[in-house]
Image (cartoon, rainbow, N blue to C red; front, top):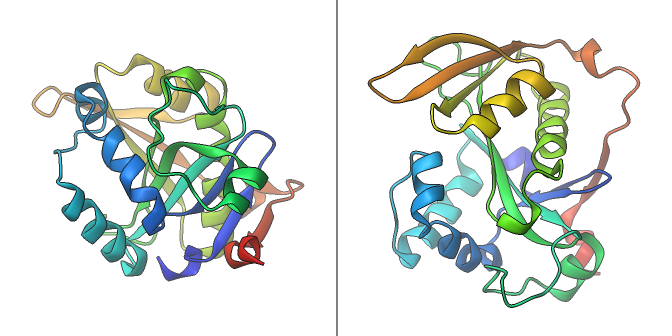
Length: 211
C-alpha cells in the first residue's frame, strides 16, 4: 500500500518498516524453509520472482506489508539474514526477523475485513513477544489510517498451535470456522478505534534513516 510505503512503526521490541529491495534476499532465504512454507501456506519462488513481488506489493492497494526488525537478533552465523540492510536501518532499528501483513481482499467487504498474518522467521527470536507486538502495531496503525476497518480475520494452519494461541489468548480473536480441506482455522476480532485509546503509536518516515 502506498500509505505505508515510507512508514516506520516503532515499539519496545520491534520496529516495522516497508518491504524494500534490500530485504528481498533475506526474505527469499527464509521462504526456502519447508516449515515456513507449510505454516504460511506459501509456494517457493525464485529470487527474481521475489524481487518482482516486492515491487508489485509496494503499489498494491490491497496489501499492507511491513518487515519486522528487532535488536534482539544479533549478528551470528546462525542467522538467515543474507543481505545486510543499510547501516542506519540495522544500527537504529535492528535486524530482519519476519514480516506482518494485511490483505484487503474480502470479496464482500475488502476494506472492512482485512486478513492479518505474521511470521517470525528467525528461530532464535520466536516466542519472545515479537509477533504479538508486531500485530498490535499494525492493527492500531491500520485502524487509525483505514477507518472502515471493523474486523480483523486470521487464517491459521491447524498445525500451528503457537500462532493459534497468539491470536486467541493474547489478542482476543475468536474461532469462527475450521476447514479440514485447507487445514486451517479462521479467527476473527472485531475492533473500533476506541480500542486503542490511550496508546501512543510512534510513527516516523523511513527516508529519515538515510539522512
